Structures are given as C-alpha cells and as structure tokens.
Length: 119
Image (cartoon, rainbow, N blue to C red; front, side, top):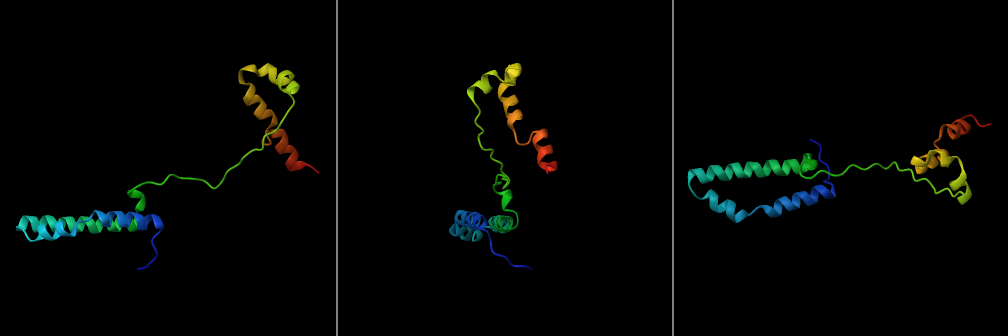
C-alpha cells in the first residue's frame, strides 16, 4: 500500500460525507430486530464504499470542469479609420470582422512564412 495525503477537495468531500452520518441512528437500528441489524450492516458497508470512493475517485461525486493552462491573448492592433472603411475589407462586407482578423492575424500564412524563413 502507498499512503498519500488527500487533496483539499477530497478532505472537504470526506468531511461532508462524515457530517451526513448519524451515529445515534446507526446504534438504534443495530439494536433492533435481525432485519434491522442486516440493514445497518448494509448501510455501514455502503458508507465504507462511499469513503473509499472519496479517496480513490472524487470526480464521481462532483466533476471538476477541465481547464487548460494554455491561453493566447492577442494584443489589439489599431488601424486607421480610413483603412478600415476603404481598404480591401469593403469587398468582403458580409464578414468584415472575420476578414480583418485574418488579414492582421499573426497566425496568417504570410506572417508564419516570414517568421520561419526570415534572415
């Protein structure tokens, strides 16, 4: 076995599960009939499995959203109003913004070609 510390999320889930348990209810039901004792045993086994699930598979309780550390933020590029209104963009009026982004994007094929083979 390899022991390791729980994450803070696992600790919170474990504590929440522990707070749901009523020891008094478990003790009272175990002192009843044979059927109640079997139900208590089943309930205890279920609790043990829930605690194991918190430790081994916390995402089964509540899934965390995935996030990526990779983020690209492009700096705004300012152009003159004349160029914006009267440039080549006018031809592509139906998708003016998309054409402008493609034209000025650092990821446009011409810019990539220049950056790779520029001497």
